[in-house]
Image 1 (cartoon, rainbow, N blue to C red):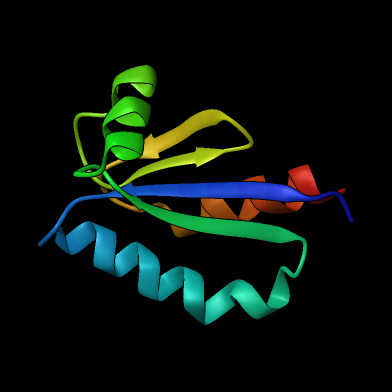
Image 2: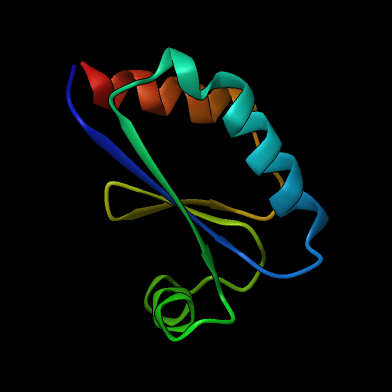
Length: 87
């Protein structure tokens, strides 16, 4: 399986961020090839990434250096993308 890097840009108090984080932790054991990082948009790194990817709604999900989605989580599309990139 190919390595996949998922970065979640989140903000404090963000409901959708918490939902995505809980979702990811519920399925992550099935994707050992995925490296996951949660980055606060309040940090210098998070601010830089939010600006780079044009993220205005949290969470901003970046997969392998490309913005995948912002705001609400589409779980099926996320899993489909992870599977595609893993093969």
